[in-house]
Image (tube, rainbow, N blue to C red; front, side, top):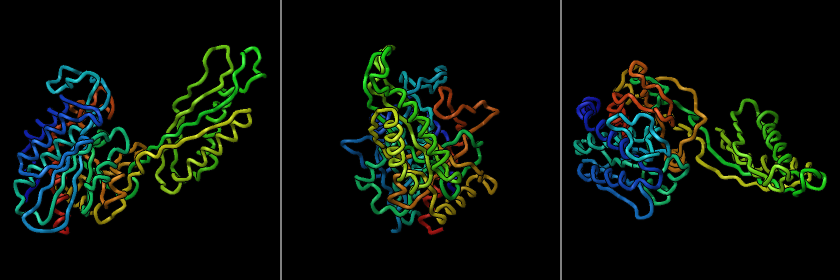
Length: 391
């Protein structure tokens, strides 16, 4: 099966679907019309569809002409709370304050293109292909719902992909090892004692203690952590006080942690707690800490699957298409699937400087080179076929 030629034949369909999704973006957990349209398209292709009463998104199942393993291909479908800058484009967002500023519209369209190609040649498929269109990737760990509902049960491998504006069209990154960091959140509440600003000695200043905690937490990065271990801790919010002349009784700090090492990540909540409590105590205050584990680090840990994907990419884009890329400190909840099922994550170039398509992800001017999209559809389909064929 020549997936590259078949995908190019579906170029108008794939780009048309991308533009439809881009014009009608929906926020995470609210992708009702998006899900409805995806399900209709899959059913039109003769693919069985599973939807859910309590969450958006859906899963399509295509059974091939011969028995075999099961492979799952994943796309995310949600948009961002961003107002698109250029509303003159014919496919610009029609939903004020909501925009596909990350590329999930592309992922959805590419996966529909792959589904259409594979469904038309199902008799040649030695096994089963499942297509998961996931809600709410931007929220964090919402992918867990599909795991909890058994969508990955019996799946032998899963493949995910992201269009990537830092990579030029015609290239793809598929590397072994850590690719994206975890994204955890911590909260530290400093409890002090209020007093008038003219008599600070009668209180315990929670803002002063909180400022000291912010500085002390950075020592975890610079003095507790092994310099060889990538670790970022950012305190992004400080909220406290009631008036300009009152010593603040309560102050809250909220921040994020990024890391790749899973064992080290598990130690971070206790490190934050001890540091915050001891520092606050020095100022006559107490500290109360909470920690939320978001998406785990995304690690392409299965070399054999990575090789299958790289070989598939060479068939579609050529021998020189594989491009290196530094691991990213951003997060991706595809990692939740990798804790359940072997798999990998790829990055498809969609940058075209000649066309002026260079704006970063999550920006109000983000857009992609749509010429990359048929290749993305072919990559999905080729990986599925090669994995099921044992290549």
